[in-house]
Structures are given as C-alpha cells and as structure tokens.
Length: 248
Ligand code: NAD
Image (cartoon, rainbow, N blue to C red; front, side, top):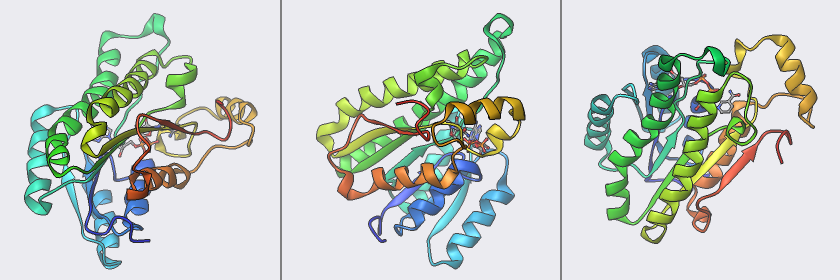
C-alpha cells in the first residue's frame, strides 16, 4: 500500500469492467487516478467521487481514444491538472464479432481503430514526458484471443496481437529510459464484454479452462497493480497471462 504515492495513472475505458478494477487497484497504491471514458460520464464520476471519499485524488476525462484530436485534448487536460502521467493502462476496447466470411470492412476497421490506434494515440501523447522524467509504466490490456485465435474474432485477434507486438517493440525502444512496457492478457472475464456471449459458449469456455470458471476484473487488475509498482522495474516486454490456465 502506497507504492504509487505521488504518481498519476490514466486508465482508458476506466468507467467499468476491467478498467474500473484497475482504477481501484492503482488507487490502493495511492496513485492519483485519471479515469478516461467515452460515453459513460455518470459511471466515471461515481468512481471519482468514491475514490475522493477515500482520500485519493481523481478526475474523469472524456475522449474517444480512437480519435487523435479527442485524445490529444484529453492528454492536455490531464497534464494541465496533474502535470504528469506516470502509469498508462491502455484498457479501452471493443468487439465487433463476425465470422471472417461475413465480416465487413467497417467492423474490421472499427475494432482496429479503438483497440490499436487508441493505444497509439494515448501512448504517443504521453511517452515524451515519461522519457523526460526517466520513469513510466505502459500496461496494455491484450487478450488470450491474440494467442489462441477465436471463431468470429479475426478483427479483435489482429488488434490484440498487434498490441503484443507493439508492447515488445516499444519496450525495447524505451527500456533504457526508465519506462517499462508490458501487456496483460486476460482469458474470459466476467464483464459487460462477455455478458452478451451466449451461455452455451460460456459453458464451453468453462470446460476449456482448467479452473472451470470465468475470471473476475479484480484478478486482472492485480497484475496491473504489480506491473505498475516501482519494484517491477526489471520487467519489460512481457505478456502476463491471466486465464485460469486456459492457455499456457
Ligand atoms: P467493457 O466493455 O466492460 O469495457 C470496455 C471499456 O472501454 C468501456 O468502459 C468502454 O466504454 C471503453 N471504450 C470502448 N471504446 C472506447 C473508446 N473509443 N474510447 C474510450 N473508451 C472506450 O469490457 P472489459 O471486459 O472490461 O474490457 C476491458 C479490456 O479488456 C478491453 O480491451 C478488452 O478487449 C479486454 N479483454 C476483456 C476480456 C473479457 O473477457 N472481458 C478478455 C480479454 C481482454
């Protein structure tokens, strides 16, 4: 408790699910929290109010991270309020599932824009000040789907696979500057994203998972908290799998 005191963390798509759990996990280490949201201002503000009531500095920031101009505006706002961002959790993500034979170019591009351009927009805007101060943590939320593939998710698998490649390349580029870049690859986690998956499919997922269940957002956020800590200073370019043993 308190490993991230005087640090500032920005969590994209932080208003619910895994992103929300990351806000709380980093706040547990006393980091100030910038909660990015796209549409759900109420949910984001609820988190902010709750964190503030616990003595944590927090504020919500609207931006569609797939839009470079909105992202730049958000970064200017966060930097204006806090003067620095030490930890970035690239968590915002969407799915537009369709078998490849039926997938439209729009579904392909939407997923790449949010899941891959989003992390580019956010990270490129914040990396210079991390390098300048000689400290930073980039944590990318990828997916088991990048490692295993998944029916109906060619767009998502490509975006999440790109994120792993991005993680490893960026890790090499900034390793000597005090900035670590890692990815966390969840298996199937109980959030809004999996809420629409048919129960029959979820049953198959449980059968394929040695632990026999879906994961919880907090179980993903715990790894994010670990990677963000100053003590994780020699870990970079890694993918931490949190999947109940589904992929080893
Ligand atoms: P979720 O749908 O509850 O959360 C996604 C968040 O991203 C939401 O807050 C949403 O508003 C936000 N978002 C979407 N588009 C955005 C945009 N353009 N700009 C800003 N914010 C945007 O789902 P989740 O399960 O919490 O997903 C979080 C991350 O974890 C995603 O990147 C997802 O791909 C990844 N993931 C989830 C699972 C799972 O099983 N739930 C598994 C592996 C990876």
